Length: 409
Image (cartoon, rainbow, N blue to C red; front, top):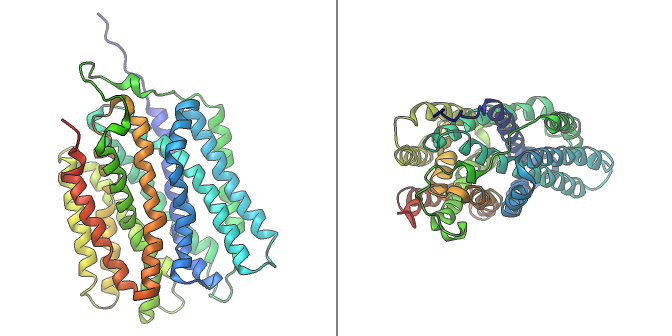
């Protein structure tokens, strides 16, 4: 009897890596624009957080997009997602360029609308990337591949704030900045995305089906993904986690506003974001290396405790030491996403694709929690808003050891 040859998915994984890079780059650019928008459009903290709400609110469509992916397949979802991202950047260019004489509120609304369109495409791309990484290889190595792909994604998140600093802010003072500064750099991103979209359209990519990946033929699965409680707890864990991942970079501008003496002359809060995202990049590479030796639950626990410790220490350290302590939490936040995602996708077999859509819907936490934190900043101050992160840490810890086991024999 000849052994069935295992398909070679190397090229498919390479494509996913490119997509992960684009996802991280565009997502972090959006979050890094909060300080810029607050300065240019003279916004309150809550109004500035609408940048997050406009972008991450698109993840509410994760389930419909997952159902669409079941109909049109991975490749067409990938191509469509890239096309929508490109359209969003083009809308940004023409919308702002043709309304430079309009009120600042109008330009800000155009920017939010264009980034919402970009986000719709990013949601499609993320739905493709996560299940692709999970199924392209042995199930027991799923967390390792997810962490490795997120490590490469983090390279993009580290570069994105630099893109804002050198191509959008470009050494201009606060009085010199305007909405038109984003048009040309974003148009360049749109053109790159369209080129990538066209190339991928004509490439042959394998169509992966989860039902073909079920190796345990003796295992019985429930009739619907909606009958797995740990999937819903996982979605809520991602919801809370987004308050951690996005919470610190979203609050950094408000922190410097409250401690204006800390910011160097001609400095910008965006300049410090690369330290946070760089910490996440380093953490993901380290996590990818050690996941094969440690249980995901144990590693997630260490990361939760480490991140909470960094935030707690920032309240007692003086000056810039407190800022760097908060930024150091990125090192521990680094592998939380893939570990939570992996725990939420346990024992699902043919329901993996649908569950991915449900868990991805939890990303709307980045649309709501920073907005709530921004409102707290405006009403009570930035310290109380940062304290809210401890609630998020506690829930994710509960999911790690209890919620992820509910309904699994």
